[in-house]
Image 1 (tube, rainbow, N blue to C red):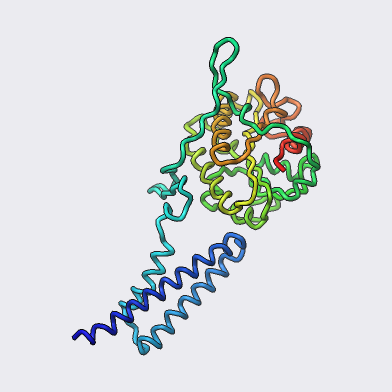
Image 2: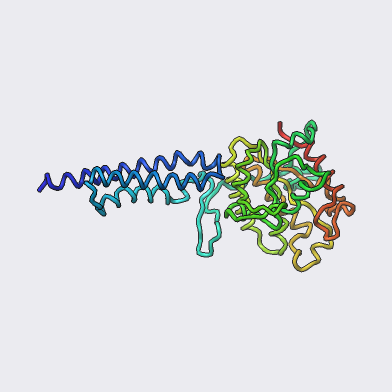
Length: 338
């Protein structure tokens, strides 16, 4: 009986090796998928055709053309296990991803947010430094042409940098009206200012920028509710950008100030000055945690009360006029890391 059993066992082991080889090929293709996101579908089709052909030839030559279930389980099972690994094994150690029953993302484990330094004043009072203290200091100014190698990630506020002459029309943009960081994490299709629909992270990866500027939050923080989910998505988004563009410098921009009357509206109660300051404190800490640079736009957009400068504000109180973008761009030009 032993000789009769050895041949099926040998074929089964060979089928497992075939599956491992196919899985290894898929892993090798990951680099091309990240660098060439527009070819992802084509690469998947070619891979499936190649893997299917390999299994077919194996059955034809090694199994004398007989379809044997245990061989399919050996080859296809290994491939399936490889392509459907636990997400916790495929991401950075600091972030574990879990799809919950309501299809939201949760941060299960990550390094504790680095606390901002505490300063003791001359009066003996101890106070925690806020986002203004964590911001990147001024540097030698660069020309607007420097931003041709940069990409701006954001919502309608970022679109203003794209469409106004006082902005940065020479830069690259992944800006979509009404989006938050969850759109980037979940791979949601978003519409650009020109009407073209795209997947934000795929579009950003295809641009291959040397610097990425992120500004998101105004659209998803309107309600005065807990913003833990927003911060979780923000962390995940920064991790995903870092993985896709490991050589790019990432600048986290503060959420911009608004006019005081904005938070009096029921649908924008969450955009009050104190709450925005607290959220910017969190974003500054996240930027430090993720080795990104934090930019404090309030330096040039806020008045002495911490409100959006009135002459910069559109009638809605939170969008910005062209002259406000001029001040914004001047700030960006003088706060870079060459």
